[in-house]
Amino acid sequence: MSALNPVIGRFLGSVKEDWVDFMLAHVDPMMTVKRVMARVVSIDSETPDIKRFVLKPNKHWQGFKAGQFVSVKVMINGSFHERCYSLVNAPTDNVIELGIKRQANGKVSNWMHDNLHVGDVIELGAVGGDFVLPNVLPSKLLLIAGGSGITPVYSLLAEALKRQADLDVSVVYYVNTDKDLAFANDMVELAVKHPSLKLNYVLASSGEAGRFSQKQLADVCPDFAERSTYLCGPQGLMGAVTKVWADKGISDKLTQEVFGLPAVDPNKPINEMPITLRRSQQLLLNTKATLLESAEAGGAKPAYGCRIGMCKTCSCTKVSGVVRDVITGAIDDQPNTQIRICVTEALSPVTLDI
Ligand SMILES: Cc1cc2nc3c(=O)[nH]c(=O)nc-3n(C[C@H](O)[C@H](O)[C@H](O)COP(=O)(O)OP(=O)(O)OC[C@H]3O[C@@H](n4cnc5c(N)ncnc54)[C@H](O)[C@@H]3O)c2cc1C
Image 1 (cartoon, helix red, strand yellow):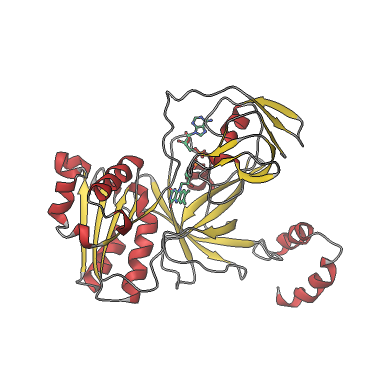
Image 2 (tube, helix red, strand yellow):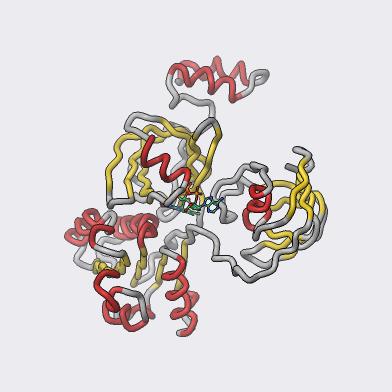
């Protein structure tokens, strides 16, 4: 690649990057002008529905902080799809690892499980997220994970112990059965190396004792309220933990990562107002909770990535109309503003530059 760089540099003024990438892909799909590509090094089943993908990125990869996610772009039946996945391993490794759970009828997760093979090359997009450790580690850490929410939590764990081998860390990991424990061997290895790490696996199959409650948590981690806590898991678990922390007045000690948007209230009325997609000349109706969903329900196919307002793939200009950000509640009634349609609801007729 380095021998080709001067040639590419001369061409870039007049030739599009995409075209150069297209030509280079015939030599090696890992060779690109700027795009981050990654080759699949190994694929292993962690649980019946979670696979671990180890990838070796090309030289354009800029790295990540433990706990962050990367967007993965894959071509399925001729169209690109983009989803966010947490990076599982510690950032110092020269490979990256993803733990992907198969979702019933999910497009990308099923494609990754069924069609991606060792040696294949996929494209990676932006790295992001604030689910990261502070520069100065807290004296005591509590990491709570549920199901596939273990992915960023494991990354924080590996990083924290790399930075301070004797850090007082308690992990509480909620799953249905012992077969659903992902990265369990890695965690046991860490526990053997680091006696200050306490691992608690909580199995729903063991009845009441296997479900999160303040009492259950206090049984396995009596000083939980004193610990800096990181949480990632299904919405039910996250809601229950958040409530306990709020009731105890310690919400400032809780950092969370969400894999999806909060559930929409099914009884909330939706005003069926017009949505105009100016460039594609489509007139749709606002029938769903967000502009992205309404556009899809009307047959449009706007670009999207994470669907929770993080990756900005669905960002576009709102030409006119009044909208509300469903996460922050902020109302925007100004013309020509930039919005993320996956987390925006219409409060009036809206025109988008799509
Ligand atoms: C920051 C972040 C980090 C993440 N990290 C991870 C991770 O480490 N591991 C992981 O496994 N996941 C992770 N996710 C979730 C991941 O990004 C995907 O959302 C997940 O893999 C599902 O994508 P999919 O394409 O398979 O499903 P999609 O096709 O997007 O579908 C999602 C669900 O919606 C349903 N659905 C789809 N379309 C419709 C429709 N029209 N009507 C009704 N239902 C529909 C599907 O049945 C499916 O159950 C993360 C998400 C975020 C935002």
